Amino acid sequence: MRKFFLSAAIGLAAITAANKPVLAHGPLFSPAPETIFKGGTEVTLGLHTEEATGAGDRDTEYELAVEAEYGITADWEVGIELPYTRKEDSNSDANGIGDITLSTKYQFWSLDLPGSQYKAAALLNVNLPTGDDGSAPRLGSGSTDVIAGIATGYESRRWYWFASGVYRANTEGAGNLEKGDRQFLNLVGGIRPVLTDYKEPDTVLMLELNWENAGRDDLGGAAVANTGGWELFLSPVVWWTYRQVAVRGGVQIPVASGLNGNQPSTDYRTRIEFIYHL
Amino acid sequence: MTRILRTAVFALALLLPATAFAAQTQYQLQVDGLACPFCAYGIEKELTRTEGLESIDIDINAGTILVTMADGATMSEAQADRIVKDAGFTLRAFTELPAQN
Image (cartoon, rainbow over all chains, first blue to last red; front, top):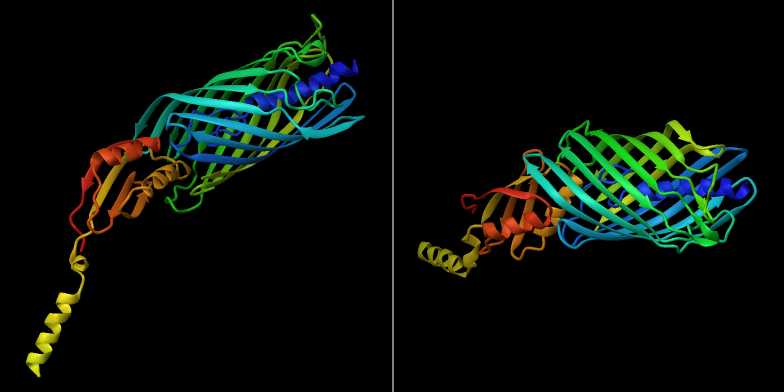
């Protein structure tokens, strides 16, 4: 029973990892179609937290991650993320390197208009089992998982919108545990309240609607009862930029859920990131 | 005395570098897709790699970039188009402005 609760908590954390943006500019909790300019490098330092309670348990996760993306062309970028994770539950805690993620994104369509852009991109991530899957709580998934998705969006001097769909296919990890596959759908709206000049600080406000669904975990061929289900989040986000420096932060607030059985549900998730274009 | 002064001024004029009187070339680039300053930094980064570039001035609200080249340096439309494209935008118009002294 304990293992199932922990599995669910780790699964929720994995949801965070699967739905986070590959590139900095755009939504905070979901992917954007933007790619970095050719030859450009974007470095991100992020702090993410998550708390889930329920079924007699309280699970907390903190993650400090360094991420880098490089623009091979103006339409194609590659990236890597290195996380350092700390997890706590009611009885134990663990910290160490988490699962490293390799990523790539290809912008297959764009339309540039005066003062605005439409874009669409395909993304592919591979989550490597570099985190310790024997710790309690588990820091890593113990499996190599693939994440694929499509993101599209519109950006103008005043208004923003984004939409994306992501699928995470999990493979079997240590202890014959295969976490349920996950699906994500996201809608985002944003506004730039004040139009500033190029060399002035710039602020954008966004509101995301993030839906996540997870299949039941599979343990040695048997479905795990208290796992899987869906959650819906409303997520306010603030962007602040000045030339090649950006800071963004936000919080995911659960507004509805349909989780299977008796398992912890997400209380909140927060994210703050510092981004620099080299 | 007057003749001496006249000769001195003439000599000074000969000594001054010829380029002091050359015109800097300026171009105005009309760029589509310029919605976000953070993204527009890519154009600044790409342009500053251009040999002979003196300065750039990005007007993100108008969607224009004023490029000033050093004396004797020029930029072609094809060059500007490539730079803008590599930054992730589209060059709508390229105009060479009247010479600035």
